[in-house]
Image 1 (tube, rainbow, N blue to C red):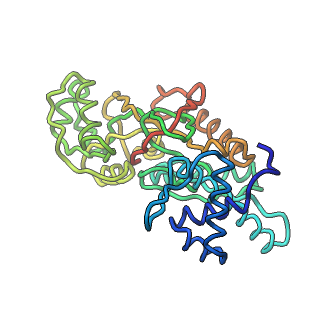
Image 2: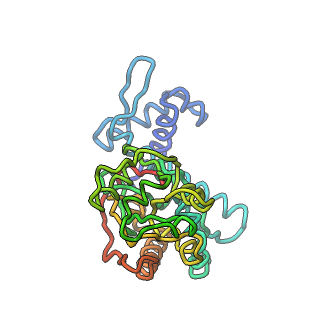
Image 3: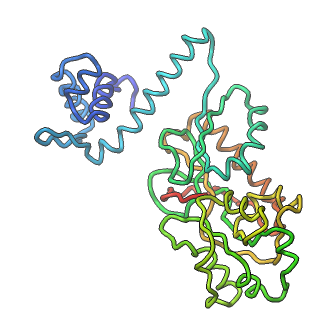
Length: 326
């Protein structure tokens, strides 16, 4: 589409009406007449050839097309507003601010220690980092890391790595392990679980039980936590078996604070993906960060603590599903 035909005033009216779900409230927010807002929305609908609102008595509802368009328009206006504000405040070319959403454990264990390297390579880009407890990437973020099963929505995903779970525990507990009897070791210790959306609390331990040929093991017991970081913190206290991805806890393993009592690992079916809005793929800052983090984790995986994990060969370029907790 030729940008000279973009109906900017109509888009502003639509954004206000979509935010308030009321032409009257939208008009008040823009300090214009209600008829002007309604007229601009009709112009935009005629321009697109589809309705953006369902006009019901005393109620305004977004259509599917309206729901698709509103977040894009809002984000675009937010970026313009931020850029103009930065120029006014700084009186010079501002730094590009990139908003990045990360799962809490991922941010603490992996991202924060390496993001300084990105800043060194790209000093003109300012990173605005937000941690997410796992309910999904912030829709306002430019890029996000999500922990998810492969699924389909509207977000483009690049695979960083697929999760492989292994048992980690305190050295004093590991010293009691019979290397030939992992089932007995599991039975004799407290199990630590991490919540996964739409999965039973013992889902991950069920995978381990099946992998060692003991699906009959009682794994529906122990403690349940929101994040794998909390699981590991409890294990560090000297009690319980953590079932986590060792890539997230490389420092704890290398320092000897946590021990792998068995050379076992299980694929959970979940992975870590970089999530990008399709409309942002040509944004220079997004493209730089996307390329950098994919390459960084490919290198990181090659030196992973298990010695068995391989770097992903290519980005998955699938669409995102509903992320779970990390």
